[in-house]
Amino acid sequence: MNILVLGSGGREHAISWKISQSDLCKNLFIAPGNAGTNLVGNNINLDINNFKRIKEFVLDKSINLVIVGPEEPLVKGIVDFFKSEEELKNINIFGPAKTGAMLEGSKDFSKEFMFRNKIPCGKSKTFSKNNLTEGFKFLDDIKPPYVLKADGLAAGKGVLILDNLEEAKSELKNMVVDEKFGEASKNVLVEEYLDGIEVSVFAVTDGRDYLILPEAKDYKRIGEGDTGPNTGGMGAVSPVIFADNKFMEKVETRVIKRTIDGIRKEKLDYTGFIFAGLMNVDGDPYVIEYNVRMGDPETQVVIPRINNDLLDIIIKCFDNKLSEVKLDIKDGYTTTVILASEGYPESYEKGDTISNLEEKKKNQIFHAGTINEDEKVKSNGGRVIACTGEGETIDEALENSYYLADKITWRNKYYRRDIGKDLK
Ligand code: AMP
Ligand code: GLY
Image (cartoon, rainbow, N blue to C red):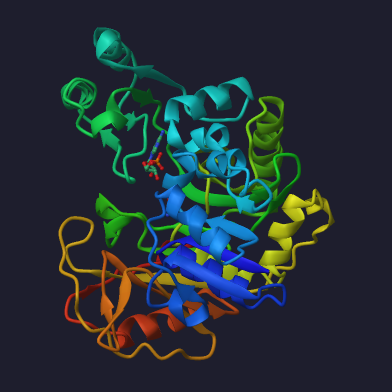
């Protein structure tokens, strides 16, 4: 079958790398891809938000399946577009339609969904410039730290956690009145602070059945010891020691099952990955957020642990046969360390030649912000390479990740040296 993967990050390289190993895969295209995806398929220079151009390409290359990596085209309705176009109707597209993508596209919608479906989460209320005074009163009545969340998509930057009441009020005003995060912060959730450790849980669903994939822990802050601004994620580990069987059973019954039941009952149109960002509060899971896609860099540790044919799993979703799949997970640990450009998540330079990209046994490099230029691989983004290592123990996996992290070089490489250290 002919497959098109949309996106250009480490997540898309990991998905494409796995798909390319399937006997069911004939031609694999990645739009726009990166220097890594070009090694496992063919990069196509397409704007992933230009649905008309995607349609032309899909028809031209007789694509049978489209896998959508990032959330933006989903929230913008790429799945609805496919379903509404006569010639695209029968082409499978893996990802939720707009109604399902709202679970990520609007934090207000997703919180209301959680409340309705009795999914454990922090209490919250949503405010806009029209009821700002009520928002101030709400802040007066709750305890710090104060969590403020922009309702819409804000590229991972829309959450502020503040200790000071006056600062929280002033930031709430900045967000709703001055639209600090643009349209995204016209509505802002003020949420109860959840004190615990985070873990990401992923599932594949056809909107009726689900298959829970291995969990992972992501390291979001730029600095060691979880300091500095939030990033997309600077490293990840799977499995997560504290997510033991007892905890994961609670995740399944209280979160995943109720989420999928809610999707079905509320008739959200959903086939795809779903990702619950959870807080483990004294052994109980609380949902911080949903994402309607895989995580990046979590994919770079989750996918390598799956022995099954991922393409077969995806096809089974469209054939209503997901319940037939028995997941086969590798023992041991998988870790990934992100190599970023110095300056990320703020400004950084691009265009440096990357050296020592050869792969070693038990290690796997996934490219993110890289590009082929003048027959070289050059840096082309904030997060550049994910160094994934496997091992029987977490130490062995980390050793394999850090072997690559030290070896791969370019002028302004930066990485955290403490990934996984808190889990040992
Ligand atoms: P989100 O974009 O919703 O994932 O939030 C970004 C980060 O803010 C999360 O990964 C958490 O570390 C933190 N966060 C979000 N909501 C809460 C909360 N209610 N309590 C504590 N931390 C939170
Ligand atoms: N690593 C978190 C995310 O993909 O949203």
